Image (cartoon, rainbow, N blue to C red; front, side):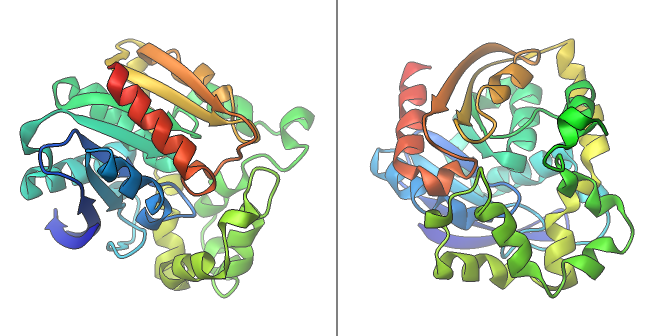
Length: 292
């Protein structure tokens, strides 16, 4: 995999490319608590299978820029940033792209697929909620059923002015390990070297606030996604859940916005599928690509 940089819309984005130039173009989107490094086990496997692979460090993460504010982090803004990058770099040579999004990398991949189906071969939507106000309000509701384990408190914390800087900066490793070692985590996948790589760029105010941009922009992303309730994406979509992660919820939340939906549950897997189950996830992606 070759490491490269490009400046798009005033921001510098870091990415990797690999695989044969004439292979099916596959774009890998990482999630919160990760960078493009999360795909280190999946990307080479797809390249070895004959696919042309692009792995992005989304804006706010890894070695990409980490601007302040909210607007650059909405799902549509992220989608258009990477879409411009692919046009500038010539990735895929104009062939439809297979998008694979994990966690908060999945919402921008969905919007690209829905807005530009002619550019999209298919979408793998892994271990991520769909940005729809109704289901998310149910998940985040202040009620005994949802608050038993604290709900998704990390969606709310970035909206509190000054709180991420006060509570996370200086304690970045403890914050990351809370997720990696939790019930849906995979401690065996996050050795010291892996955690050190994430801490390299998830550190200080810029690293912490950059990574949380997707949550500051969540309401904009919801507004951008809800039109799909009326006009679902026509591209083939595979919803992938980990048995110990979101599981069947991934497909249930996607079903109103994807007209050609199939599902896959990885038995025994948690949330961090690219790192926990790279071989099984690569196999699921390859099989999906072969079927569409």
